[in-house]
Image (cartoon, rainbow, N blue to C red):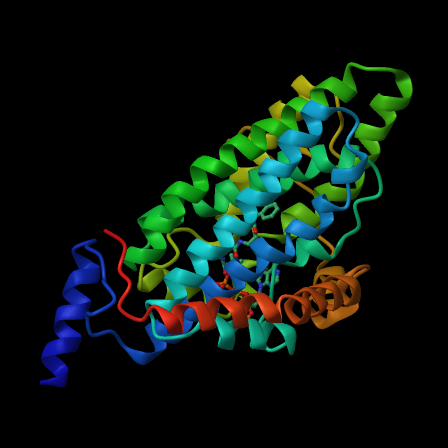
Length: 311
Ligand code: FAQ
């Protein structure tokens, strides 16, 4: 019986078909998906903080409306992802508790501060750009609910990326001070963006198994290289410089070579020692506590209308 189920699972993966919530799956497959989807969901909601920092100081009504919409989209992405995790049998309460007690991670990138308005542009261009590069292949992930959530998320992320690019282009072509502000933002966000793709392949604990299960379709280093290749010509059009003296076109590889990444910094940020780790998690815990009455009220309301189903 068990071996029959496992053979069916293996055949489904081999045929590039989808695993759905009610299908049998190995415990490790389920656990690895919960791990990745939860980390992704947490990143979306923690990722609202750095940009929200600029909503009240956006330079125009138009910029403010755009930024508010973007930050709201991120809350929505978090919700689709927590729902995808729920289909694997883990509730949102449990996942949030793990985030709040440091037992699950969120992306390293959101532990860096947003010091100027140009950082909103740099996040859109580089952070959302890296997210799209990483997430487009996840639309073909072997687990159905995650793959389908990713389709909509990627569409919204591409709008976010264009928004950041356009913001930076405006600053780059503005006054000397605006141009310098844009360049400074790129100088600070470039290397942390490259770290978003995760450790180098030979140190990536989960890559081999996740690729065999077709959760991941490409390795961390492959996607990182793809991202660098996309950014170099875009930086040129922006009139801004990427802060890497080793960036060089390699005709043989037909890729851009780039300099060494500071993996010590990456490990420190993951350990909780990045510039904003305490602030981000502290604010998240506070928001959760302050929202307790909303959750209680919603549960009380639901209990009063147990049979209610939308038509
Ligand atoms: N930060 O063995 P691997 C966004 C952890 S985009 C923190 O290579 P894996 C959009 C990893 O979890 C950002 N931790 O792991 C947005 C593992 O630890 P564990 C979110 C990292 O899973 C934009 C350990 O290191 N996107 O939010 C990082 O095979 C703007 C070993 O690593 C996603 O999560 C890191 N950078 O590959 C929102 C995409 N890298 O779990 C707001 C989905 C690695 O054993 C504003 N996730 N780790 O404790 C993935 O594609 C993969 O999980 C990777 C890591 C590629 C991130």
